[in-house]
Amino acid sequence: MRRLCFISETVNQLAEYVLTHASVIDGTGKPPFPAAVHVRGDRIVQVGNVATPPGAEVIDCSGLTIAPGFIDSHTHSDLQVIEVRREKLRQGVTTEVVGNCGFSAYPPAPNAAELRAFANGIFCGGDHWGWPSTQAYLDEIARSRTAHVVSLVGHGTLRIAVVGNRQGPLNSSEITRMEALLAEALDAGAAGLSTGLMYAPGGSAPMDEIERLCRVVSGRAKIYSSHIRSYSSGLVAAVEEQIELARRTGCRLQISHLQAVGAKNRSLHLRAIQVIEKAHAADVDVEFDCYPYVAGSTVLTQVLPQSALDGGLQALMFRLRNPQQRAEIARETDASIPWNWEDIFISALESKQNQAEIGRNLAELAKERGCKPVDAMLDLLLEENGSVNMLSFNQSEDNLRRSLTHPLATVISDGFYVKGRPHPRLYGTFPFLLGTVCRQRQWLSLPEAVHKITMRPAARYGVRDRGVLKAGAFADITVFDPDQIDSPATYERPELAPVGVCEVFLKGVPMKVSTRLRALRMKQ
Image (cartoon, rainbow, N blue to C red; front, side, top):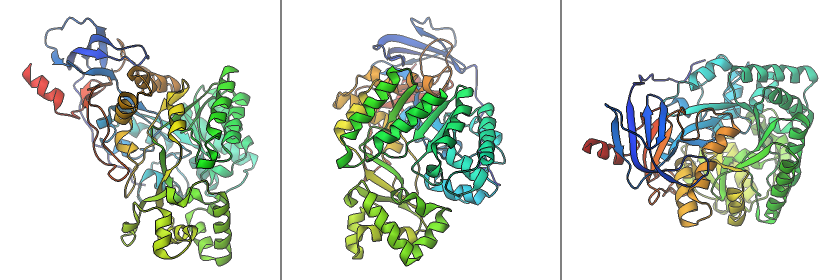
């Protein structure tokens, strides 16, 4: 298997900077305070009243805020973190947590093509990525030039490594093999386990299988992050299942991108929050995360009943070509879908002939094609061999505000790359949070929001010496203009770059995301 290419970089560990005249938000949640930040090599030397040492470069940060580098604790950039992509750096992100929702690039599967087919809709990958071992992948992400990368082991990937795309319960020896692969990855440095219980084949796993894996996680004091079985009518039961797993095993539980999908299910959001609060009060280590948008994005096949995906995408294509099986898939989809068809938009697909469909919703597509929306969707999946991404308007603004402002919440992007039109969260989550959500809507104070994207996720995922500005911590630093920071990215124009992020330091190295501080440095 061919690995993705990585370009090495030599870093001057003796570079020294003093960032002066700033307002410091240190990540702990406490109010801003005036201070200077002294950086030497890859570490912070001092935060406070700094006496500039001889030879240090002084950078005037008047009118600006200095914060820890932001931590995106739920991303799907598993391939892109080693491709020198800068979309996250431009937002102020210096740490990414990959391997979410049951998808990870390791452990390798006996049939590499099977793993790629499973993950490519989320990874935006091709036909050649892969690593010969878990350790090889973890070693490569450790050399990323754009982020400190933390990785979870995906439950779906574990399953494919052991039994392929087969759905249904596994026997005890098969689960034992999964436990061994998980233990190997955790011991090699993976931060925990993730499940994607709305994605085949992982969604077909019974609770006892996941419990056994969670015991491996708990025994190593790692984290368990779950894309739960339902965010619609089954939301509360799905949250309760994961909390019961945490209660039985003692593992640290993170419920991924909490939301109530579909207008008729919006009242379930508060009930789910109350279930989490009750469990937390009873000493279950459970928290959740959320992104600051009402719309989400994933693969279009998630709309289908999971049974349709047993055996992978090629098996789905076979079923869709069979009139009787297709009719049953359509019936089950129509009966269970929580969205209105107008709320589901095509965001990416493979073929040239269907590029005009990007940006259209399924109701529009059905009208144009002269058929029912479910048939338009199934036809499109057939035409694209199952490789279609969607953007869907999921939740209410009131529920979004409840999630973002909750004391147990961490803020994430859940961003992933697509061959088409991505969700604007990929390009703008963190400036959008600090600008639109904090400054304009005033849902959160700036220190509260920074805490939710720095110290809180660092503690949650065991990220040491990051997420807080203090002596001895890594010099992962974001400098921004609190009056300007925001994201102009929209659903129609998602790739617009953020504004107001002035500089980002990754282990003490300025990443040159803006010309503003470079101009100030030239005046010294």
